[in-house]
Length: 110
Image (cartoon, rainbow, N blue to C red; front, side):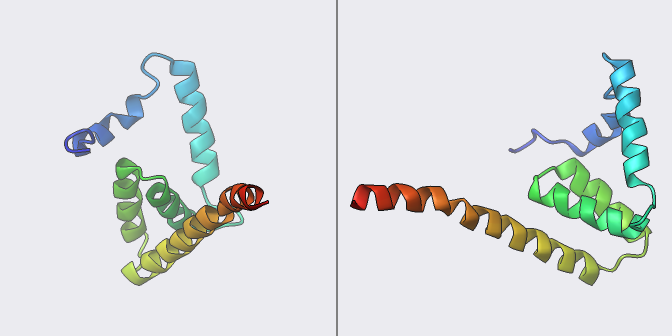
């Protein structure tokens, strides 16, 4: 990716509604509601967001949520444990999709 992702671009995120302000406002309202403490704590939601950011490979979100987790007092060990859940889930999803491969192999062997 090289310089495709630049850290300074994260600062532009609040302006994502520049060409569609109504949709931008709706997104941020939704985001704000989804991320505030509810049945899950702010810490739990930050950990979920960090893992999703990693599994979806978003460098901006990894940066933002790593820093948010640290600011919420989440330890590096807790963050790493959460990342292992994400890694296990990602591996499981890949393995579950081998069903398609195995079906094709079985069909060819008939």
